[in-house]
Amino acid sequence: MNDRQEPPQRPNDNGNLQRARGLRRVRRFLWGTGSVALLTSMVLLMAALMGAPGSGAAPQAPGNPAPSSTSSATTSLKTISAKALTDHGCDSTEWHFVINQLASADKAPASIHVTWANGSAADVPLAKFTGGVAHYSTTANLTSTVTSATTQIYSAWGGEFNLSSGPCGTSTTTASTTSSAAVAGRSGSPAAA
Image (cartoon, rainbow, N blue to C red):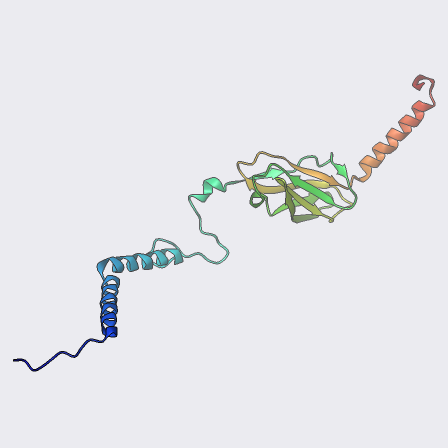
């Protein structure tokens, strides 16, 4: 006979045994072929995203965006020039330009390049975007006249870029004086009556 008896199992021992078996299963899963493949895939993906050698992605210098073959069709740009440079609303306090029919605020150019008759030029930043219209304002060169305003915009854009308002200069004053004189001359003539 066998005098040796097994010690009685405590209720806790059964729970510990099940936990140990569960941990062994988890360990086998983690070190199994499936998890090694997953880990390898994750490492390769991280290497590709970071531009590691051999990943097919070339590292880029700061400030130089990587060329993208997919974005060139959607982000191709065209140069546009402002209209109404001599036919705009009069406002002696600022030059105000608008670009309308924009698909969204992120499609609005960050700035426009304006040149004046006095030889000055400035990049005027986007002031606000409301209802599909980008607004650009500056108080620079209020005693001169705008000779050009240009910017780059997405190629599918089909709206208008205009000088909305600005100082009207002497041409409007001269026209007003001439018009006033002509009206005054007519009012005194018998033909006007």
